[in-house]
Image 1 (cartoon, helix red, strand yellow):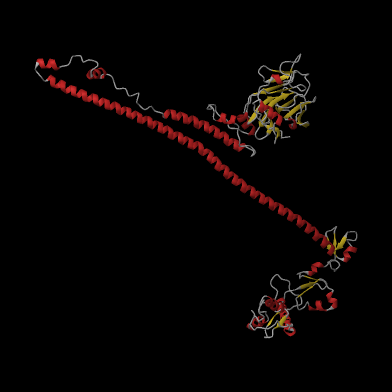
Image 2: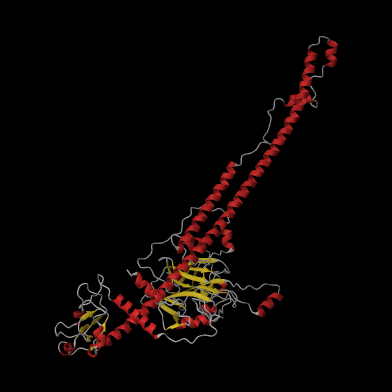
Length: 618
């Protein structure tokens, strides 16, 4: 602990402006000391030239000279303070001075020539003696003898790159004479440069991965926000039918209450009428009772009414109806509970099926499905109640089969003359005999054995399946109505999205996609799926339940030319920018095999047992 005298001395050797030890101390005419830079800076910021301590004013800025004696005293004090800090006992784990007796001081340097560690006091000769100044001093180490060669008792000065170890000068002439040895300093610089390069790469990787972490966190935040918004929107969507049901319930209750009020009013009117009739009957009964009590024959016969009573009289009407029970069926309130239960049960079953289908669609979705549905889908969803038992989809293909299947029929009038279409429009094969000349040549395929489907699609999603087991080479897909049917090119740029299959003489199957061939196991049935809004055309191996190929980012829409728009407007017709996509079918080989056949098969959304090794997407 510092004494009071040392603290007092230290305070006196500090500048009152910067509160640090004096640097180039100067004295003012009033006798106070300051650092030269401190006092000149103080005066530069003041209008008056005065002493900061005693506030004595000076007419002009004094000529300041460094107080050399005071400066030497300050430097001596600083040196003594530094030496006192260096001459501290070594703590456990620190390198001690090898010269000091107990208590040993902390070592400041280690001499690699003397193999000795020195404190600040014993290091003084190495800083003063000329020959000792040539010794190599390093930061203190505990075992400097480890830097000596045990065999030759020499310092390690070289590094053997072959053995990856430090060696001395004698080792380079002995065991390592044929090895590449370089000075330690050179190897140190090279290793340090390599480590620095690796560290830079690691830093780049660290920054990259840190950036990836930030991106992932940002993605998670955005995904969470999107999910929360989606949940809120879904809740709002589900709220609408609940509100509608509540409104329908309230309307139904109101109608029943109104009918009940009407029935009660009619019943009250009938009761009022009956009360009037009862009063009249009571009056007539009293008159008859009084008449029955008289013994005057003449009075009785003159007062008694004619029997039987006339039908038009009140008593006649009452007596004619007295035997009939009262009929309240026309004003009674029928029960609607059974009807309501039946309707709600149907709605509940329909809603349960639709919701189960929706949940499975979301569960099986790959995250890229569009949330827009066509008007046809909405009509199907709100149409007739489905009574068949519903089977939940097991995979994406089954979901497509259940939701998007359409009935496709071949259009005979668009087929090549050498093609024959069956009467039901489901089978396609080569014609035997002379070609057909029916149909318009403008609609026919002229140079390729292809045919269109009858119905085109300009919105929504559709799916159909084609049996290809009876064909050795075929081409399937969809095409725009406006394609060139004389020069047919099977590529997206020409408005055609298709896949083909050809079988060679060895029975090997090759997949043809945009004029490129890929070996593939032969499928039995191919499913064609089109999402018009999403711009996707996919082909599935139905038996293996695997994706064969998928065109994504397709451009189905067209911008009609100005001339076409003008002509259509002059004719009073509208031109659409959404051209129809037509399914098309055809063969890749000439018509020398009448057994080469394609067949449009019904879509059965029952998954078959997949092959052991499913084909993957090309």
